Each structure stands twice: as structure tokens, then as C-alpha cells.
Amino acid sequence: MTSYLIRNAQILGGAPKDIHIADGVVREIGEGLTAEADVDIDAHGLIALPGLVDLHTHLREPGREDAETVLTGTQAAAKGGYTAVHAMANTFPVADTAGVVEQVWRLGQESGYCDVQPVGAVTVGLEGKKLAELGAMHDSAAGVRVFSDDGKCVDDAVIMRRALEYVKAFDGVVAQHAQEPRLTEGAQMNEGQVSGELGLGGWPAVAEESVIARDVLLAAHVGSRLHVCHVSTAGSVEIIRWAKAKGWNVTAEVTPHHLLLTDELVRTYDPVYKVNPPLRTATDVEALRAALADGTIDAVATDHAPHPAEDKDCEWAVAAMGMVGLETALSVVQQTMVDTGLLNWEAVADRMSYRPARIGRLTGQGRPISVGEPANLVLFDPAYRGAVDPESFATRSRNTPYRGLDLPGRVHATFLRGRATVLAGELADRDGLA
Image 1 (cartoon, rainbow, N blue to C red):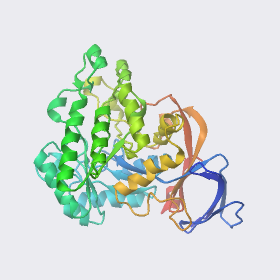
Image 2: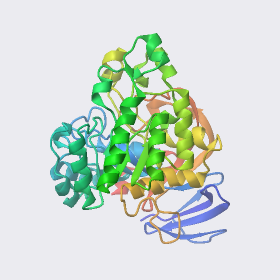
Image 3: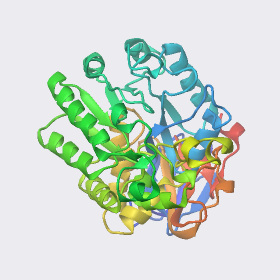
């Protein structure tokens, strides 16, 4: 295995240090190290962060390889600084059996660019009627600990309660896509002033908030773990804050796009801004940033949702919902949270690595950059600024809302257990990762 000597990296934004990586682990950290290494990297000006962990990634395989594959999705993850992703269950077939989650897990192992932890469906076929094989998926080689019908809400309270009770036996977590379906029938965007002016069907904040309120009460009643996906409203933040104040086992995530973009962009009628949950108001964005800063929201999760061009380059009403986000997430967090003074780099590591790994119960990921720890880390250049070019993406799809937008920061290198998956901003050769 190739060894590396990284010189003058600022670990979590601190004073420059040298990092010696060999045999898959961090061997030494210090100043002026003289350790022998195969590759010497000048990291002056670069921030060293633990490898990022994404709780919410759509890899599309099996079934929608025209949008993404496990290989291209994990390559995109590596370019974004991720060393582990949780692959959502809304594939074709749905990941609701041990066989499908094991297939996704093995494809991740073969890709070599980052760890892939499958998320199992809560209900059979995501239909919300019958619990899926939760125990079998947990006992499989994939060792599933997170279950979600993401893309759809588990709207039946009885089914949700049973799922929370079931996963409690093995310390699993149910990750809820909070969307009351009856309140969002025909909805096209956030319900508010802009939807009224544009004449588009409104998606009210209460459709998210009412489900979260119900589910935190269910989780408390059962004594189980609940995770709230892609929180998007100020009201949702207050409910989660209240639940945490009660001491209930509730965690939550926010996406980069909900930290930056607002529903005013829908005035362009560009379907690239069509997403579920929808872009909200500037007031909601402010509340989400504050909640991420104070820890009410635990994690940044990309909700990376690739779509082929034909599903997005069409009229608004029929366009698919979703945005790609793995390769731009850290840059958006720098712009919205670090450059604004809301988070420092140590807190970024907490929200994008440590906490996501704990929520997903991953071992070997989300660990500090310390001697003896697995060498999962990213070198990030915060001084860089440039226009986003989707044609340079590793993901198979191009549905980014940031095309042409100047964003700060760029991943210089990503290491997965001591292997460089990205070096000098470019993907490593796949054969060298086997």
C-alpha cells in the first residue's frame, strides 16, 4: 500500500502539522516529520478534515443506472470528500430485502471509492402498508441499521410505531421523510407568496411539521430512535428543538441546498430548482442555519438525487424532483456556515463526519484524525473560488442548481483507509484501489 507524508496541513483549521499515513492508518502527527513515504504532499493552506459521511445518498442502482451507478455515485462522493455514504432504498427493485441490500453493499465494496452502507426500506415496496424484512436486512452481510421509505412518507401512524418498536431490538433508527401526502397532493413548490404569484400548487410547511410532531411523540412513547430527513422549515426546527429538550432520541439533517437556496428561484421556472421538500423562504433558511450552528440539527446530508437530462429538461409540472449534491456540499457549507462565522472547521467535522457516523452506527468512519485511527480524511482548499462546472462532475447526472455559480473551496485529496481515492483534485485510478 502506498504511504503518504502530508506536510503542513491544518487539522480542523488548527496550526499546520505533518501527517504520516502508512498501512491504512495515521502513523504520526507532528511538526517537521522525517518519516519515509512513497508520496510527499505539500498541504500548505489546506484544511484536513475527517472523511465526510453522508446519511442520505441516492445511488439509483439497481434499476436506474441511466441516472447513477454505485461506481459513479461513489466517485462523486470521493470528489466531494466523502469516505462513506448511506444509499437510500428507493431503487428498482426497492431495497426491502436482504438480497437487494447485500447487492448494493457488494457493489460499494467493488467500487473502492468510499464505503457504501445501504439503507433498508421501512415498508414493502415503499407502499406504506406492510413492514419490510427489517430484521433480515440487519442480519445480512450489509448490517443495515438505518431504515427509510425516503421519497415517500411512512404516513400510517401504526406502521410507523411498529417500525420504531422493531428496530429498537438492534439499536436501529427509522429515518422519516416527513410529508403528509394529503396536504401535498398536486403540490409543485413551497406554499407562500411566490407560489401564489406564480399560480403553482403550494406545499405547506405544516405538511412536514405535522408528521415530525407525530413521530417525535411516537419515538418517545416507544423509546426508540427517530431521524428526520431533510428538515426544511423553521417550524420543524422548533419541534425538533422541543423534542431534544425533552431528552428524546431524535436526530435531524439538513441539505446544503436548503441552507443556501430559496423559493424565489422558482420564478425562473427552471426545473433544476424542483426538489422534495421544496426550497423554502429566506426566513426558513435563516432558521436552518441557526439550528445547524447550535446543534439542534445534527448533520448536513446531501440528498444527492441524480436524474437523467430527459427527466429534468422539461416543463416544470412533469419534471422530476431532486438535485445532485455530493461534489458541492462542502463548498456550500463553507459559504453558508463557515464564511458567515456560524461554524468553525471543527464543528463542520462534527456535523459532516462525527455525528452522521454515530447516527448510522458506522464503525471506522467519523473518527478523529489521530495516531492509530483509520486514515479516512480529506484535504480541502478553502481559499479556492471558482464557478461550478457540472461537466467536470463524476456523477452520471448534471442536475445541479449551482451551474455557473461561484462557490468557495475545493477538495484536493480524499483518503479511504490510507488509499488516495482523489489526489490533486482528480480521481485515482480504479485499479489502484482494489
